[in-house]
Amino acid sequence: MELKKIAVLCNYELLPERVGGMDHFFWQFDKKCKENNIQVDWFFPNYSDHGCYSDLKIYSSKTEKLENYFLAFSKEYNSDYMYVITHFVELCTPFFATVKQFSKAKIIAVDHNPRPLNGYPFKKKILKRLKGILYSRYIDVFVGVSNYTVNALLQDFGSQLKSKTKIIYNGVILDSILVRETRNTVKPIFLTASHLRESKGIQDLIESVNDLSASIKQDIKIDVYGDGPYKKQLKEKIYQYNLENVFTFMGSRGNLNEIFSQYDYMLQPTHMECFSLSVLESLAANVPVITTNVGGNEEAIRDSFNGYIFKAKDIHALTNIVTEVYLGIKKINLNTRTDVEKRFSLEQMVNQHFGLL
Figure 1 (cartoon, rainbow, N blue to C red):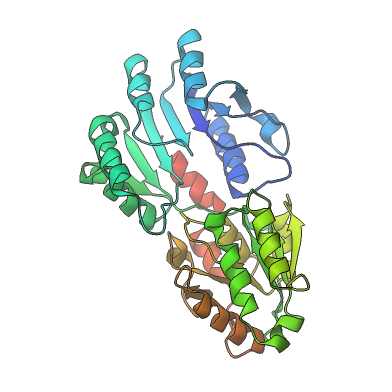
Figure 2 (figure 1 turned 180 degrees about the vertical axis):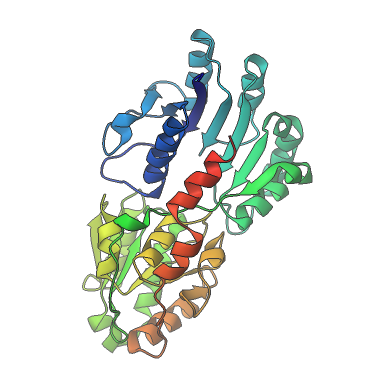
């Protein structure tokens, strides 16, 4: 049987200290392809052999932009790919037209990109629509990781994409996630887990905690997992409000799948989101999520069923939810893992992506 070849471009840095849902997806997708006599050439910004990356055929360049490196590589080695798949790569750019100039490969573009809370500026909206007119024709399939993402794709690039858009939800590897057996309904313990940048809204969480009653502020504990460029500003705000006894920065961890189960609730006050794997992982650990109404959050979280939803940047609403959850007035009794098993397993995600080939 003839070996088939595909290329997957992922503008996703491989970090041993940060192993998340997408890493597991890449590993399982590669395994699925090999089982079906398909070779995957993976193009990442950097090389690593942690986890199962040692089993992948990885190409990388530290000096060139990922798309430019792939084009040069493909031309030099006359690569004959059946499919070219992109993850975390800007959509509807001249890159896709260039690929079609020298390759008969079908192009599948997966959109993981969150949109700004108040939308793009008018000039950028016009530019995106123009790019859609010029370059969307070169992409055979657009994949959105949520219904929100598919709608955003059509809004960004035009309704002509509708016939070739598909939804494939992100999924999590359930077996590796430890499950919380019981949940504290009074004085629960909280975590937040995200890249520390302004758009993740952790500054709103700090503001909301500052508005809690003195008795709650004295006891409540929130552990912050992750790192990023906004960490200094967050620490300064915590110091300003004298909340060092509440917030503890835990750094980036590669084993969050084992850590979620140590908590009762996850807080995610994000301003922009596409479809959060950390939300799914928390739910899979039987840890409900308190999060905002942005992106695909409401496709995973149903208010008062497996978590709580509030309007992004509504600090007062977040304060009220945290207060009522902490005092046991609000409580989630559901085993949140059950819903994730039905709707958001990694196996489903892998099979649906493989089904595009």
